[in-house]
Figure 1 (tube, rainbow, N blue to C red):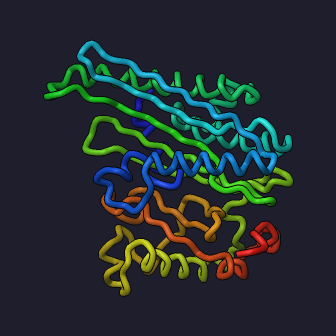
Figure 2 (cartoon, rainbow, N blue to C red):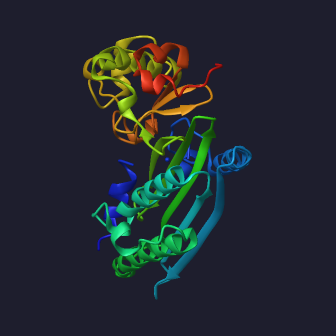
Amino acid sequence: MNIKRIFASALPAALLACLTCATSACGGKGKNVEQSQEEAADSLSVAESASFVTDSIVWNDSVVSPAKNKAVCSISLAYPVAGGKQLVDSVRKWIANQLSPSISNQPDSITEKNTDFNDGRKLTAFIGTEILANLKNDLSAFDDLDFDEPRTLEYSAIVSPLWVTTSTITYGCSTYTYLGGAHGGAGFSPAVFNRSNGDIVGWNMFPASSRPQLTQMVKEGLMKQYFEVSTTNDFRDALLVNPDTLPLPVTPPYFMPDGVHFDYQQYEIAPYAAGMPSCVLPYSEVRPLMTAAAAALLPTEE
């Protein structure tokens, strides 16, 4: 299987930032790996105190080709072990589905090959071994090329709770892939889980009737918070798309302490140098646009 499928999965799929890219020449506004890991640890402490317990799982491995080219895979998971069966099962399945495209173009590949979601360490080892095998297959192509120095292919993933309340848990899956080119690719996929039943709250938190107003609010948020421009013309110059028909992100919105976050992926609306554009809308502003069911899950104090 061609490793380019991993890169394809990372782009449409980041823990709060662009991972390695955020600390180098990405140009976007984000947080580096160390910051993300510290925040994840803080979130885990909150999760445990709220009776949602996770097991910290880290899997790392690498292979080296005859020409000294290297492939590295690193996966870090906060895997649910307690907190209500429906919630735990839902988060486990979501984690598997986030990483599944990295090893196959079939979304249910992990479910079909490894159904024992009770054993998070076994699942993580299975995923990591499959990804590393794909990376290893591509090393042979690099051995035939005349590089000044050996290249290192890389895949990394961090999956962790980002925010826990009495009614919801926000999880994030960050991925980073480097395939030997000019730069790597980062991706971020969040999910908000209803703690009472494990249901995922995504774009369904906003009815179709509120989408036009929401899009305008996201546009204004991007201009002020991320691109720091005041005119539509300046905003247009920063984008790859027409701001007059700006789409809402492919990535679902998610709850954080400061409001609802809206994140775009690399290249989705802006050049690579712009990073992963995002904005935050306060709960007080978006609550009137939400369904009654979604609004009932919001924090009571803002």
